[in-house]
Length: 200
Length: 306
Image (cartoon, rainbow over all chains, first blue to last red; front, side):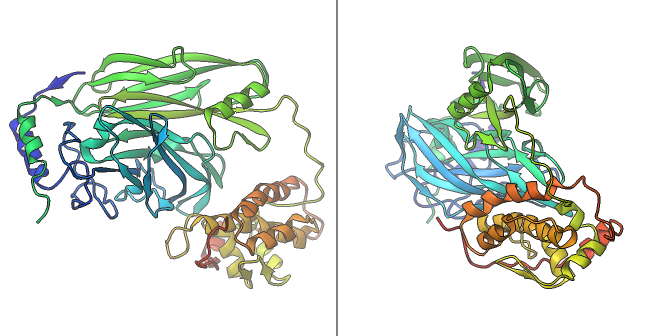
């Protein structure tokens, strides 16, 4: 892995952000940050200004992380509505307790809204959390005067999240690329084939 | 007092530590050159292509690993530097011996629905990781069974949702047959009928998103109203309408979802047959129809029952 020392300006920015509370969230949530998707209560992720690592064991407070879903690269949909069916997180094969948010129906065209899927305790350093998100069929889309069903039957969204990465900013955010993930089948119907990034 | 500067110590430590570069990757995946490939004869040879691209605006990105269950091995540890705008394509193949094998592979993959419309769906994910993130891309193989039974002969002329929502004269004749009871809403006027047919399953007229029950109801109501108009106009009937109206009046989302495809198939089965003598089609008027339409649905406060 290539690493490099960045400018002092960036470091000053980091220090300023640190004063704003940017690490893994504790039970006292930090405020929102401009320029980032507005995250509904209880937390707002901080600006994505570095890939610095933090020590999740540095505090004795229980440290939490959230799992979020954000629609990006909207090609012009007025609405892309999906429901959350299931979220699970496992560490070494054992399920991790998740404080599921009350979010069920999500409109992924809201560029300012990274939907909170659930909150969980940061897994121990050195471990990897396996995250699984299942969307509920059928979703729906709307674009101008047209609208129709969005068939989301397919693979669950799954990824492995190292504890240290989750600790970076206290979240894992799935960025679902709407322009490439939604394929129109005909005038009324579309399918979802997830094309995404997982960011921390 | 906020937790102020609890992380300032971390930032100070980082002053002496190197920082990672801001890598960023996206990937694109195709199977036999498309995002979705259909297979109808076996053995079927598939070629997957996955391209990883550096989309960071100014910096090299390092591809640390790639994975795909159909690669051999399924995960490759890499230290691949991609310049700005640079990409690398991975190509690998898969032979599916039979429809049954496709179904089995789909089941192993953990698909939330491995078969739909009599075909097997086999989704396949490629992932590429950088330090502190990953990109994922998915392609789909649709496996058709070797012998698809022929559809039953049409029982009479029908037209689809797209016809009824755009032909104002035909819709006018349909609603002239009386109110249409859809279980959760009754259509009393042309405005109601066109409003229902044009209603978005995604949102209410207010712009608020529909929850699952609201969405399923609209999707089935589209097909139910269409089927009722087909009966009134052409005399083509199906017992599915009564089932649909009953389901729409309830909150069992599984029942509602389960009828959408069947009723859609009914509305499509006679679409190629000519109009009966004397039926006044009228011109397609999508703009006028849209302007007349007033969505009669609104939030009910109900939700899907278990």
